[in-house]
Image 1 (cartoon, rainbow, N blue to C red):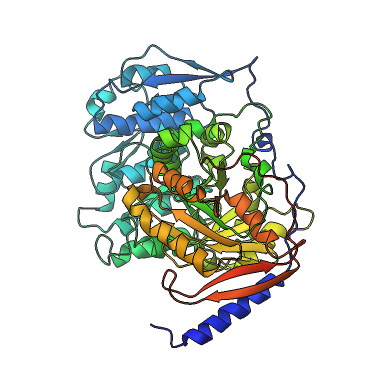
Image 2 (cartoon, rainbow, N blue to C red):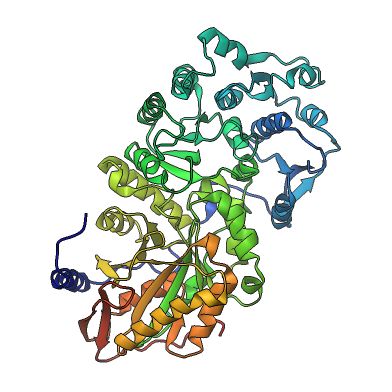
Length: 606
């Protein structure tokens, strides 16, 4: 429905809102270093160079595994790593690359002499207590997955069973559950709604499952996150699909999904993803949020049970190098531009596309420019070694913020008040461990977020800024809530140099209309369509003109905070009406004595 408010009315309302924001005051800030906490609070001890941590490595790239064998390997990997990081599996070249990153003086990989799946099972014979049989019937593999973890058993397909049950390691293991027989006893057929199958599984096994997590995964996917779901006994359902309507799921399916999330504990992490991407995210994520759950997309995250338990070096603390520059840039009448790469709530993206397509790009390795990266705080609970790699290899131009939604993909406006407090308190605690001070929100009450982050009695403030939205959107002045900047981002994609021109034109038009004020623009870099080389070209070209400065998000938060406080003695609002990006735009215009700042240390490559 179109708004019936007239442009002048809208402009006045925006003007009034911004005046109120400016009057709200400045945020309290913790002393330097207070936000950094040692991860030993999660893992009390860790390896040292003198006492490295040992684990096994097996390279299966040449084994020619069938899909049924991958199911078995995934469940074995989960069971072996359920209590400690014992086994790292190299499935592809990316997995070999991550092993190279992990293998330093704190760790000692060993390579057991195994050449096939039967031999690997024999190597871990003492850990496996049984077998769970599944078949190709709908959802059978998903129902079997947590049963493996409950019984410390491996999953074996009905087709593979005649051979696998004769292997030395399995010949004496009991079949603790046979899905083929159980389906037949219940009268399940190809016409049985999946919701009926999962409701039966929920009633039978959920009470014995892991009570801290759920899985959403396609039963036809044999590997990746299945190892974690199996090893940790995580109750696993299908990839729920509300839209397009009736494409895959029936009313009985939706009823089952909602029964599961309504009758499971609060603050559960949900691994996997819904189906399909895009339009179906809102109905699923909003329902999860309303029932005290948060999503960590992780479909294709390999070695998750190993990474979850791999101890970090003794006394290791996550510290952002770029924090030292947060307040180093003087506030001047320039255009300040920041960019945040999207999708860091998605841990399989952080482990795969973000690493190999963006972070390892020639432009980032040889001449980085100021850039911020989303990284879910839940990486500490799932794969802290991945976070360690990024933090250890970050330049002074790299900065990390939360993934969209907080500690997981969630929508705060759908949460109950009780869960809102839990979600943001635990997000704040994880952010402190990761030295993160900016929140990537996804709608909701910004005042509640600020209060949770900065208003807890006896706890240092943890939020210097809120960065809202996912691509798209127009531009508006950064607002302030209790002194904390709230910035609405605009989407940025550019596959080649020619596609940069529109963004150059936008910045030029903005500068021409508001020539005597600092202006703040934050782009949301849509990761799949924003090569780092294009972002670097954009930054270097604009900075060469001298009127545009690229900054990290930490620097932008500091600049916005200083734009209406300290020695800036007067502030006014300038309204630039339709013409720039097609919508009204509010920008800060400051005058009077300019706050003196130290010269910028480092800075963007230009």
